[in-house]
Amino acid sequence: MPPKKRASNADSNGSTKKRKENQDDTESVSNVTASTEEQKESEGAEADNDSGVSYKIEAPMLYGELLFCGATNWDLVGRKALPKGMKNLGGPNLWSPNRISTLKGIKIRTVVSGCTAAHCVAITNEGKVYVWGRNEKGQLGLGNVERYDVPQLVTSFEGKNIVDAACGRKHTLFLTENGKVYACGENKMGQLGLGNQSEQVLTPTLIRYKGPPIRRVSCGGEFSVISDINGNVYSFGCPEYGQLGHNTDGKYFVKSNKIEFQCENTPRVITVFVEKQRDGQVSPVTDVDVREIACGANHVLISDSRKRVFSWGFGGYGRLGHSEPKDEMVPRLLKFFEGPNRGALMIAAGSTYSLAVSEHGALYFWGQTKTSGEANMYPKLVQDLCGWKIRSIGTSNKSIVLAADESVVSWGPSPCFGELGYGETGIKSSTVPKEMKPIEGIYVHHVSCGFSHTLLIARCDTEEEQSAIDKLPVYTPGS
Image (tube, rainbow, N blue to C red; front, top):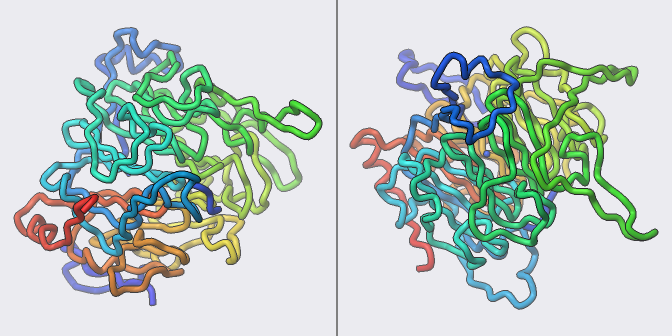
């Protein structure tokens, strides 16, 4: 049975409505302010971040306490076995949302992981950064490659206000309030944007970019996509399926039987956006002002100021939504969301699937979560959630978690490891949306998912709200 929509405080009549690729190994709408009107008119100018132009990327205004559920054996997440020579340090599956002992009482405004990631980032209301999880390539930015079960403060950001982050399979991007991007972790495909393809970078390092301040950051498995305050979008890293949007998969032959890839190791602007007709005719799309980015393992979605959606990269299982499983080498307009009142307010991407919330508040899904199931080749309405007001979407490898109305709703195919948050005695997986009952009555601002874990920010503005949170179990990492 689909979850029943509970009456909110504003619903005085009490009426209810119905709502409703495995591989080894992201709500806030930030506003941008310029210090002068002249600076606002500098659209398209190649202004250096350090040119003295004073921009500020505003962080989310809401904050709360971090809750966590899902897998904590970070070395094993997404793997059938540990890498050779690695000791199994263990870690339980948390089947319901837990408070984390070391973060109790700390006000968190942003939580970040990724559909291919086995590590986490939590940003406080003061712009400080805590990280934990897998760290084999230095993706935590702590200067080493040790796994951390206990959240650690990234001390190298002292004096900087971090407002957002993004997690790839083994790399991380951090965004400062003045639009600068720092990167760490694996870099053998150039996914850190540092101008080289070094094996790994252990501390957050400023990317090689000179241009308008960056507003959005997102990571796929081995690539990164960022956008600036003028609506330009840039990509770097692995081009294997066209996910960089530069009209190439980067393949070239080293020998007759060996293929390598020409990776992008610095941010490169994407200049071509297209629309394809049914007869195969291709025409350019202009005036694309990028506002939001969502990366799957090997595909990308963006939405622009006109609420249009473009997708590109790996097309398997219909994740691009173009009614055909073909890879797209450049951003292609997803016609479903074009036209009056048909635009997308939110977008999200899991490893092999995509989601969008329309202007009417309806949730659409395309792609595939269950490998043995049927794939949706184009956006399909999630009827179980009609009538729900969705404010945040978390996408893991195969599972989906939503904050909507007064509830958190989740679903995903087996195997799951607690990321759905149904509780120790609850079901472990579900093919249809179900409420996260263990936190019933707790209002969640924001949701983010990793490969097989979920991070939530719970509102704690009142004594009553804090009291409800205090009743939840507390997870003490390493105990």
